[in-house]
Length: 195
Image (cartoon, rainbow, N blue to C red):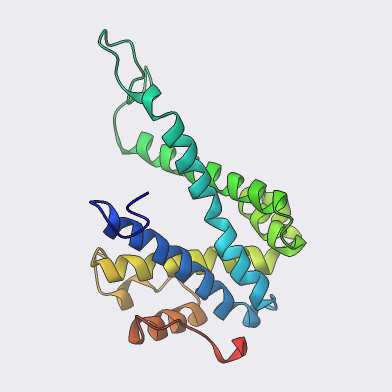
């Protein structure tokens, strides 16, 4: 809890995480008009997508004691029996966690009775069939999420190359948002369509 307040050893990582949430919401709002999506609902979708992370972290905190090795070595293993300890396992685990976080985000958004388009956009992140009903909003959230990730990694100095070499897979409007966000790192990145 202290890390959320900016105190303690995990504070910088928490600030990056919170920055990522805000960047995702800001990028979603800025990129929405070009895709025919309501900017406010896009902003809410960006915030709501990350609610699942909070729920997942709280759940993990409640059961953290179960993951500790017991004195007799009978506790949970880091790698499932019969599986190699390589990056394939790690990548699958990361994908599984991302799916669970998106699912939790969807459930929270539905329970909070957020607008149907927001819940639908989150549904499109976890259900391939829902992508046909919310194609623009689902694509928007994916693009905004990738732009926000690049922004956070760039600020932390963790990109393997300059930002302009890492963003070629993004659409032009997302690259434009990143460029604006980079020029005004402490100001909220907005688009003229937001006014």
